[in-house]
Image 1: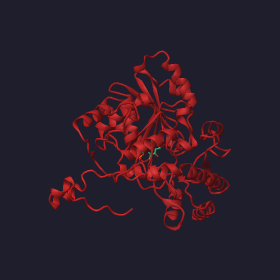
Image 2: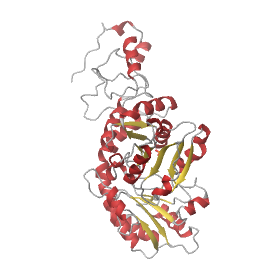
Image 3: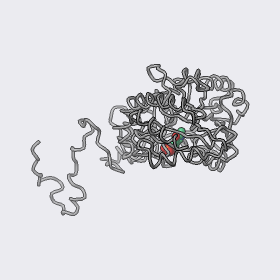
Image 4: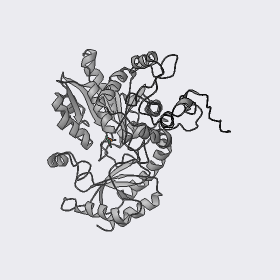
Amino acid sequence: MPKKKIDETSVESGYRTRSRLIHGRSHSHRWDYNHHVIPPMTSSATFRLDSVERGALGFSEFAGTAMESEGHHPIYIYDRLGEPNGDMLEENLAIAEGGEMALCFASGMAGIAAAIGSLAKCGEHIVAHKILYGCTYSLLENWLPRFGINHTLADMTDLSATRSEITPQTRILYFETPVNPHMCLIDISAMRDMLDDINKTRPANERVHMVVDNTFATPYCQRPIELGADLVCQSLTKAIGGFGTDIGGAVIGPMSMYHDLIMFRKDFGGALSPKSAWPVLVHGLPTLSTRMANYQKSAMKVAKFLESHPKVERVFYPGLESFPQYKLARKQMRNDKGRFAPGSMLYFVVKDADDKGEPATKLIDWAATHAYTLTLAVSLGQIKTLIEAPYSMTHAALPEDLKRARGLAPGGIRISIGLEDWQDIIADLDAALAQI
Ligand SMILES: *Cc1c(COP(=O)(O)O)cnc(C)c1O
């Protein structure tokens, strides 16, 4: 397109260079979301409002439950309230997870905090599974009690044990499945039936809501909303982001939760930066299915290899027939086409006569510096295979005796399978196992 000559009769032509370099063309039509094949990365903390009337309309429509404002384009005001990249990502996340709406947050933890903060208030109570992501545990243990929100940990593989912890004050049933790191599963539909039974005698504002952290499985491998969850939390940092470039989180659920969640995000401030929403929108989510299909194909090969290795005590991968909850895995871990989808995460325990974790540490330390395809790092779901020791790393926040009592062994190793050739991953693991 030939460059247009600068119009020297325009509004700005009478202004000095310094002012013109700040404002440029006063109204540019070069900013165009409709005709880009890939949406541009928005980079404006605040938005031009044209008139007080339009500004007032924008504020009055904020947090309204109509996703697209009736009759006109959304009126953006300020990034913390909403902006184009995050909003586009939210539409796609709602579709991916099968929810009515999604909201993005600055991190998975910001989303979890918002989900809990919107459903429980001072004097109310949470029942959570006994093993949680370390920071979620710390949030429940160290911070929420300051706001008068207390919790009880329960073994959610045991329905009646879980039910007996629910009090008249309980508002949230919170869990991850598969549980990080040892892949134990919690039966989402069984929890739904239990809550329906409990809720049928309670008024709406005293109901118990089910919040499921679906980060490990992703919506590719498990559909918690279809199985009865009220809210789903995701760390976009993990498999949905997929490339490990950005931190982010999301909460997906019914439209009835939208208002409280977006107000919480506005006031506690954990909004996702558009510069972090963009890579998830453009690279992460569009490749999720393809990556997950490949990850889990390799995960199955790696799990079988480890299972047959003489130095390995136990392998926990929902795709293995030896998996303790294989039947539940086959029922619950299904992709949107209904196919069994046991995921990309596996946990194994190496033989360790002293039970102090020395062989596992030796294996991981060797891999960290010698194995080309195994990277020692926390996080998961990336195109690179990541390996770590949950006992002393991701789950360090849990007290020693609790870890032991809840089935975490010092010899445990977590692997997040990446996109490398599975033969290379197995060769590197084989070499690492030869060191112990
Ligand atoms: C990483 C993770 C989180 C927290 O997500 P951030 O994006 O790091 O805040 C929560 N739950 C699980 C299961 C995770 O793996």
